[in-house]
Image (cartoon, rainbow, N blue to C red; front, side, top):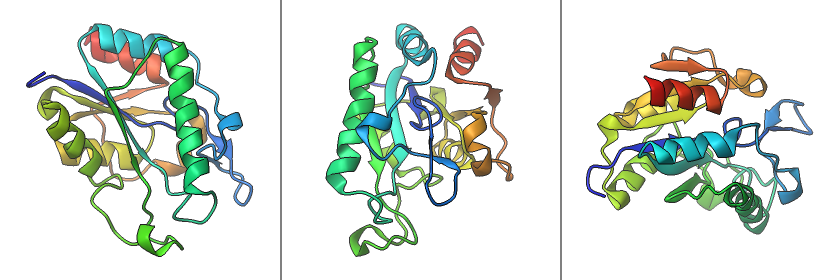
Length: 193
């Protein structure tokens, strides 16, 4: 697969719904498998990307363990549920990277800076090296400024999905190549563009 193009996809707000944080009320990552709900049209959109020759790669910041909100086992079970629901729709990812770190985490080994937390490009670069991906012909699809920044920092084109629940994570200086209401619209723009 030398030089294959990839679609790097954020998880929450792109593939699955956000869940209200009990402290802030803002939509964040689901913390338990039974909270995972795929967004409408995601399976079909991902299948369309794969059919168009894109390698599907997941890249998601998941700091709940670093923040002491859930155990690593709970976080992994939630991630496995996302993949299970996607597989039931006939979609499989080549790889799915998770950054477990947070700059202000309370778990020492997961706190502080890292190379993988978006907008850093570490997860994209690692997947590109593992799968021999051509970053210049690839897309980063996400719903936050951090996603757009990670794509820019890795050298991909970028799509900002304007998921209403993650509006609090957008609005700074990042300027994506495309904007879309949801993943199906993003895929249509990429494939038809």
